[in-house]
Image 1 (cartoon, rainbow, N blue to C red):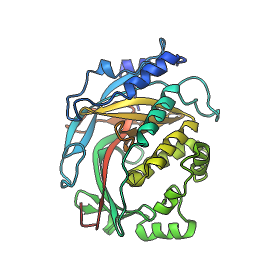
Image 2 (tube, rainbow, N blue to C red):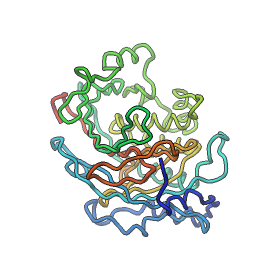
Image 3 (cartoon, helix red, strand yellow):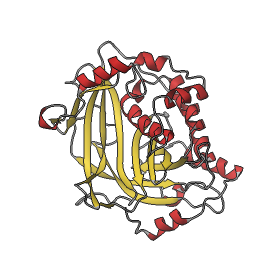
Image 4 (cartoon, rainbow, N blue to C red):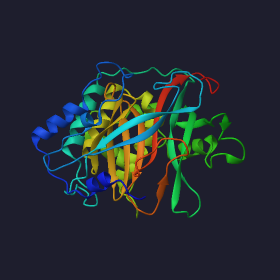
Length: 358
C-alpha cells in the first residue's frame, strides 16, 4: 500500500515515547467513557477521540468508511443493501521496546489498562442459555480488499455475509452472500460442514473448533494457564509469530462464538491477553457507536478486534498492512478508506432454531 496522507506518514515515522502513569490514567478514562445519550447520537469531534500517550507520542487519527446493514444492532431484519456510515478511528503508535518475544514490540500500558477495564465490565455482563438444537446466526457487514492475480492494486468492495453456526465445533452449516449460498454449487467452500465435522472428530475440540463443553473446561480463573492453553493451538511459523496467529484465530473465534461466552470466561480471556506481545489500544467510532480497538502488530501487519465497552463483547474486526507492495483502491461511489485498512467488519449474533430463521 502507499501512504500518501502526509499526516499519516508523519505519525508512522515518529519515535514512540514511554507513557507516564498519568498518561495511562487519562487514556483509559477516555477509552472507558460511557455513552450518556445512547448509540444513535452524531459522531463526536475528531479532536475528542485522540488518545494521549505521553508528551512526545502522537496518535494517528483518520476518517474511514464502514458499512452497516439496516443500522447497528440489526436484530432480525432482512439482509439488505449496504449504507455508508462515517467511522472515526484513532490509534497509538507501536513502542520501541521489545516484548517477551523479541520479534514483537511490548504491549503498551494503554492496551493493558483497556483489557483490565473490559474484563471488569465482562464480569457483570449477561449470559445466554443455549437450547437443544439451536444455532448461532451471525450477520457480518463490512468491506474487504480484492486482488486479482499479481496486480499491484486491490479494490475495496462491499462484503456482507450471513452464517448459521452449529455450536458443536462452531461449524458453519449455511453461508449466504445476499441470497447466494456459498456452501452450495460451484462456489462452495473448500471445507464444507462434513469436512469440518471430520476435523472435529479426528482432532477433538480446540480454539478453531470449540464446543460449549470445551469452553466450560477452560481455566477462566487462571490467566497464565488460559493463555498457555490458547497458545497450544497455534505455533510460530516462518512468517508470523504465535501471538499474531492467536489474535487472528481469536477474531474468527469471536465472530462465531462470542455469544456463548460466560461472564467468567469472557473476563478470563481479556485478562489472559495481557500476557501477549505486540498489543496497542485505540478507538473506533461508527455513527456514534464507540468501540475499543485492541490491535496486535507483527512486522507490517496489524489485526484489530473491536470490543463494545458497554458489554465487553467482541463486535468487529479490522486488518491493516503497512507494506508498499499493494495499493488499495476505494470502492466506486463508496466510502474512502485509510490506506492501511484492507478489511473492516462489524457483526451481530443471536440464537435461532433452524437455518431458515434469521
